[in-house]
Image (cartoon, rainbow, N blue to C red):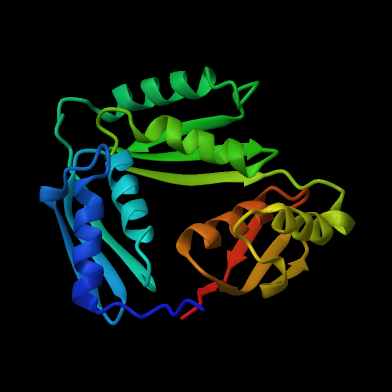
Length: 221
């Protein structure tokens, strides 16, 4: 029988700093890590949104991280790249995405912050749009206001989510409660890690008819 011991805040902080050091695309020297009762706060400045996302994922990989606050700021190194330049580049990239036939997503830019609007069939298409513009020069933030088009197969939605959970290598479907109201899936229960929590949420997003997911899953102590 294996016993899992809780880590101290100092041990969690040390583990996150080491994980940041070996994470590709992350300059760990510019990121601060604070830990209080298992809740982690990341701070500092990074060069891009993908670097910020990579730092957050690195922290989530550490066992015993119970909550995470993102206070990382994306700095604007190229101040000569104006909103019009960003808008042209963003809409050009969106128009060439294979995941978005017919260019259903558009980008508007104000103060180097990009807002995506439109309507798609699946969550993965919305995420593909966000990732596509997040790495553009001059972008400091991406706000996703893209709607997911409802589908008529709501009756099978809950079964589809449980089937996806049962297929997952890490997820224990019997520990997860799924409630469907309209086109929203609410997830409750416990997961063993942030990665498993994300896998369960992805399973919910992949179900037909789901346009919103309320992830209330908590990490098992």
